[in-house]
Amino acid sequence: MGHHATPGLSPALRAHKSPDWAGREDFGRRRRVRAEAGMRYFDNVLRDQPYVAGDQFSMADITVLEGLVFAGFAQIPVPTECTALTAWRARVEERPSVRNPA
Image 1 (tube, one colour):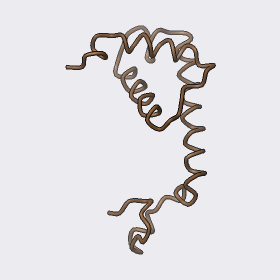
Image 2 (tube, one colour):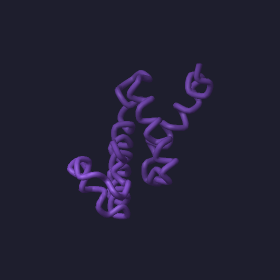
Image 3 (cartoon, helix red, strand yellow):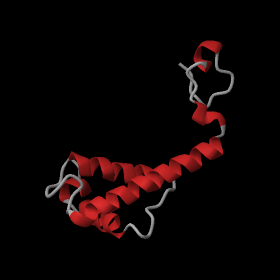
Image 4 (cartoon, one colour):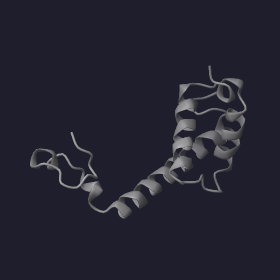
């Protein structure tokens, strides 16, 4: 199966092409807006509890952390007003299991 951004897709594959890929700049802007909205959501969650899913570090924290790592590669910074998310990330990145994965 071809990649959605690959020109010259066969007619069979064109039917599965995402309409979001029509305008790549617009697609990137919309994804950035969604990423920032997610960051703001988790910032609000972390204002009331120490970890994403409650009082203990869990797979939910690992998932959010990896999302932030990916956002960094995509050059989408955490909004400056997301202070709880930023503090949570610093705290989580100091955990031995995160600093030195097995």
